[in-house]
Length: 252
Image (cartoon, rainbow, N blue to C red):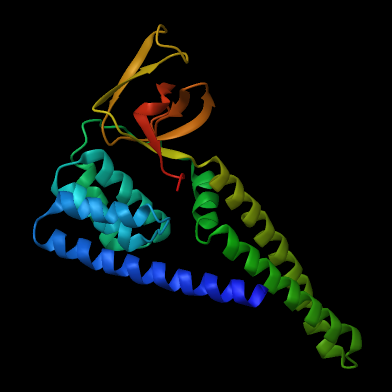
């Protein structure tokens, strides 16, 4: 019975993939014909099936950019970049879209050592740091066994030094893995989706207005309270924004 269920699930997934591929090609054709609004509707139909890919987000962002939809174009470029963080085309198009925003927010420079640690940590994802740690565990075990059973003094010295080095690198990899996990856990970006949003000092509409943000600006969400989000800008400014004014990037 389970085999039949798996076969049916597999056939359904193939059918869904085929339909989405047809829709994707249709949307691309509409885009090439300059029918950007229709292309967006077709791309969104694919998204409604919970199908997500960098190409889909990228093309959807391009269509929004053609219509000068600032916030959606930036949002979907950022979504594409989450899936393909090293893609130059996505980065370039995102820069063009960000040039349409009003807010000019400075970035607080990080200190030398903190910046170095962060740069090294971001060289790999959490999964890759974890895989590296597992590989080093394997190296340590193999080298230690060779050391234990070896008769030659030279082999014992070399394998002992190698096992110690593997152990040290293992500890370093684990440290970077957990640091990367904590960075990713705290990273909760969002895009402002209204033309203008009033940022308050406290999570209520009667509190003092701290500053204003405009469509397309990227922010970091720190916490939630009722229908408010506490946010932080790259220049260090903080405040509270209504939840409906922004769209979280980490939400699928």
